[in-house]
Image 1 (cartoon, rainbow, N blue to C red):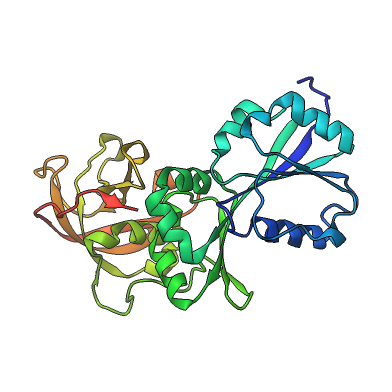
Image 2: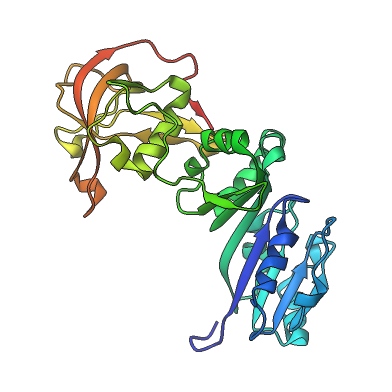
Length: 315
């Protein structure tokens, strides 16, 4: 693409059938999204909800039934006919997002935002039965909206650790009454922070890791106890970084969730040994954190222990 060639923003709305994609699009169009900019709306999946015709002024709707239709030539031709300066795509839930921007998207199109919608009551079953498809959507999203949530479902979804898959996306839980709230609001913990020692269960390690990294202020001065695998990177000097491997749906998604620790002599503890650690969290400087302070665990006790029954944290 030439340096001065115009680019056109693309907003891709992804999610499984009846997850709220059309309702989301109706909402942004009703708010005036297309008033000043001629818009091409590509409908790649039709559910029960229809587009609100009163909001389709300045919008050209094109239905795409087969993924093979999504070629750069076809898309540019539809844009030319619509005289569109921006594009919304209601993407088919069974298609991978990567296929679109690798194989289909014209060079002059720029993916400005990926919004993923999901229906709260069916989220667990889709994750269990279509893990790789669900994971790919969550991982690529800039915004995630999980709708039709009640109090119990919100608690269960927060336990699900979506931040493990995508720590950058804005995640919102839309309640059954139409209100919404941030997935991680920084004020509520899944753990009882009033305890003198907060025990982190083996199955809760992944959630705790996300929480202490995203909202470390909640843990400043708190003492925690957990099991982890020893890791001693030589470049960190007196610091050591025990942690747990996590997996969302397959081995390709493995990550090591390590926490910064200091204050104990671990010279005689071999690498990859399982240890139980009791430590107090302090917000302070550590070079890998850069300019901002982060959680550093000051260890008061560290002892070898048996590995958890499930060594890998399942997300």
